[in-house]
Length: 411
Ligand SMILES: Cc1cc2nc3c(=O)[nH]c(=O)nc-3n(C[C@H](O)[C@H](O)[C@H](O)COP(=O)(O)OP(=O)(O)OC[C@H]3O[C@@H](n4cnc5c(N)ncnc54)[C@H](O)[C@@H]3O)c2cc1C
Image (cartoon, rainbow, N blue to C red; front, side, top):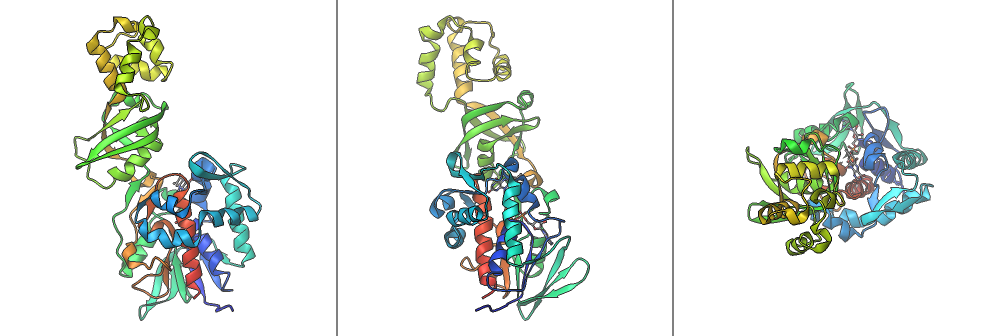
């Protein structure tokens, strides 16, 4: 039986839309407030416009890819799984496909089709959508939510509020951190907001001339305190430094420490599948001996990169492998196996794929997403102190926490 609680959801991203649809299953009075003139503005640019909407892994697999507060997400990731999300999207006529590492995309490669699914569901469930409507405050009486005040000073009364305002990354999409400000005024702790899945600026100027060059399947190693970290994936050179999947992964570790002013050393293995010994054997093999060094290396790596590397090592490009003295051969092998780069800083949180940090999860009930401090206040999505690696995991977190908040807001 419908309890008909009046619920207001603040934020029309994936978390807010999912929360609204779920709440509307059990209430005919659900309002979704979105300050943009459209819902899902960030969702549209996800996955390079293709939207890596989730991952085919089990809830346990997904939890392993969560960087911050994975245990907090155990209940929600199990309450609404990626399988259930996929079924929901496909049922609404948007077929999905699996790509490498279990990444799920719409067959159309168009994020607009995923947004359309949610717009249709919002309409079907009769959610009232207020666009260009910015929430400024949550009105609380006797430690219980009673309403939402908007920037034009109107007050909307309600029984429950779901705060789904996102993080502070890509602020032009609407994620500008207002949810954190509002929560702080209500007494909630917000852990410091840092960039995650972010590119890095580096000291080595000559490498920034390699802009646009992408090197496949490298392994990056570094030490943080006593721990050795190793991440793998492609590496992309940019006009300011390095980017790409391997660097994004590395950022989830480096954003937890203060980098020294002189920079932090990382070491890149460009041939992780080949040991130092095997590389040496190949270099001195008869197959390579009469071949020019640059000809051999450009079979594997872009010419511009090899030219820059050989120049840096002071090795004559036109030399054949058998003319290379042992010292230079070792120098070249070391450069390919343990190439040193100095990271100066991570780029700004505004440019990050996700925000690390947010509403302190110890103040939120993981089974319901309700605040432990204020009755009737719920949280969903990136506004919380949760973040994961790339692969569709961050959107699944948004949908799962949105589902749980929506479900419990009407109880
Ligand atoms: C370039 C890019 C690519 C990405 N690609 C992927 C991907 O392929 N797969 C993946 O899993 N993740 C991806 N992500 C991450 C993912 O997009 C986010 O984690 C996800 O959108 C978070 O959802 P959310 O609903 O919590 O917040 P958001 O999507 O940020 O939505 C929050 C909404 O709240 C609104 N809002 C904010 N304040 C107010 C207010 N005061 N009043 C009213 N409305 C308000 C905002 O306008 C916004 O629409 C990507 C992120 C970026 C930046």
